[in-house]
Image (cartoon, rainbow, N blue to C red; front, side, top):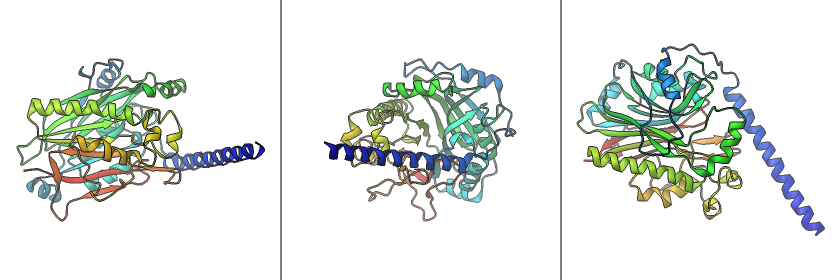
Length: 381
C-alpha cells in the first residue's frame, strides 16, 4: 500500500508540475504576442452605432434554428484588382481563406497577411465591434473590409462589455451578392457549466443559447455560377458529439439552400474547435461525451476526417489525400503544450485549382494564436 501510495503521489506531482509548466508557457506566450498591444486604436472606418445596438439586441435565447438573426452588411469601394486576381478570375479560380483573428488584437499584422494573399472569399472568426480591448469605436471587420475593398457580413455570437463578438464573411466587392443572412446553430448542453464559470468572471453580459453563422450567396466576376459561403465557429467547451450536433445544423442549412437556390458550390470555413485530444481529453469542460475515451489515439481533426466528414461530401483541400495527420493550425505555447487542427475550409462542388501557380498555404505568426488556411479552388464542370 505504501508503494502504491508513493507511486500515486509521484504521478500526481509529475502531472501538477507538467500542468504548471504548461500554464507558465501559455501565459508567457500570450504576453509575448499581445501583452504590448494598445487598446486605444483609432478607427479608420466610422462605427455605425445604430447597427451595433441592433446587433446587441439579438435574441440568443431563441432556440428555433430556422428563426432569423440580425446581421450587419456593409460594402466598401472595391480596390483595383491586381493582375494576379484578374488572371485568377479569368481562368475561373476563386481564392478562399479562413482566419481566426483573435479579436483583432493584432489588426495591423493580420492585414499584412490579408493584403499579401488577396482572398476573394474571407471567413473570419472572433471579430469584435465596439469592445474596449480593441477600441470602443472600432469595428474590426469593417476595418479589414475597407482596407481590402470587400463586402462584409457580420453576425454576433454574444454581447461583450459595450460591444459584440462574432463571425464574419467577406467577399471582394467585384463579386455580386445575391443573398445574405445568418442562421442559428444550437448551443450544446455540455458547454453550460464552463459558460457559467466564464459568466461569473464577468467577461460576458449574457451567454448564447444559439450561435449564428453568417452566410453569403455570391457570384464571382466572369462567372454565372454562384457560391454559398458560410463562416462557422463551433463551441470548444463540449466534446466530439456536441460539435457534430452543431455541424449537423450547418449541413441542414446547406442542403436547404442548395435545394432552394439550386446551388452546386459551397464553401464552409472557420474554427471548428476540433480539440478533444491531448491533455484536454482529461478535462471534462472540453471533453464530456463517450468519445472522450473512445477516440483515444486520435486527434479530433483526424477522427472527423475518418468517421464524419467523408459522409458529408465536404472536403478540405489543404490536407493532402495521403496525409494521415491533418496539419496543425493552433500551437499552444508554440506547440510545447498542445497542437491541433482547428481551422478548416470545407468545399462541395469545387475542386483544387489545377494551375501550377495555384496557392495552398497554412501559416501564421504572432498576428493571432491561430494559423490561417488559404487555397485556390475552381468549379467542377
